[in-house]
Amino acid sequence: KNNFDYVNICKTGRFNSVQFVTKSDFFKVKQHIIIKVTDEKIIFKYPTIDYNGKTYFINRASQHGWMQMSFPKTLPLGKIYFDEESTEDEVILYLEKNS
Image (cartoon, rainbow, N blue to C red; front, side, top):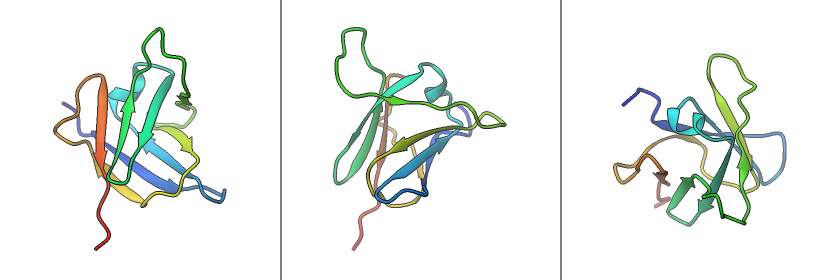
């Protein structure tokens, strides 16, 4: 287990869009990822060979091992650690509840 088991959710210059920024080894395995967002969580999954839906490109262009993905949705900003339910094939991030 490494020290980078989290994702930073950052603003982009675009309206209604965020950027996921991470150094986690999970995102180094494949070039594309499935991102599913519900009211309470974000799920990142590897697409299977026969998967035929939307995937998001993982950009490894930044220095020092950081990777980023743009996502067209407004989400709470900040650092979110992987939930303990996460596996080597799926990362789960629970969003903070606004009370």
